[in-house]
Image 1 (cartoon, rainbow, N blue to C red):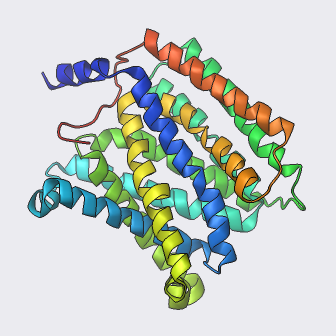
Image 2 (image 1 turned 45 degrees about the vertical axis):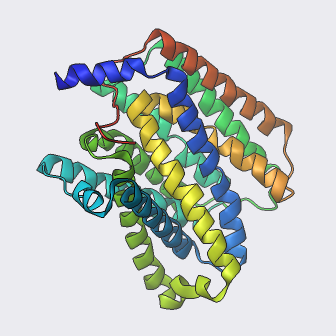
Length: 329
């Protein structure tokens, strides 16, 4: 009966709504590159930036959940009775922390664009593993859309290298980008195991875990002063709070919602819109040029989004698709 109810929920929701949720998450995450650049120039160290971003995001989610459910119900939502679900949420939290740590270490060792090339292979990883596990079959629409989206992503990222003053090629840095892709793949696949946990609560726990790991790394590498430095600048505090809420809390909840509504494969493909937003913001706010190759890559990603969306209409209600738990947002 429970499985039948989930199937009915997945087919009753318009397919375009899930796509809109994911594209909204990608757009908000796209602000992260520009905002982190501003924070670094103000003296915030990378691990401290991750700790503040994730910590503010977790706190924001906790306050919203408490306001919506009430303090007692919010506290009760953190109690996960099934051991298997607790283990899955713990593993998901580890994967979430791994994504942040690996990516910001990669940014420190190699050119950001090269690190991103490694990270954005995760949609292909998710599609491959999901197909092998029989969770989401790779039909023609998904294969074509994935190929186009990855090609467009490469064009968008590599196009930015043309204007770069210097390109740092570091094998470990590139490897860390790929490791972050592996962690992201693990999170997407593991999220099935804690589908019974409210979406906002689950992401609050994941962000809190990421904040704890990043804070420890910040203190270990730069001392307590590195973590507390933002308190000396009100403008930096405002920036970090905004990033935590609108480039962590909200898009993270939307990202997990997208996975649960339309599946990991389609979510991964649509999330490749993130670098398009990032490049556009860099051109608009930081004065970075937008090359023809990047524009063509962005158009290709949008085409892929249209293809996967049209394909989803013919394959609505794919078996194994994750949907929100009852009572979730």
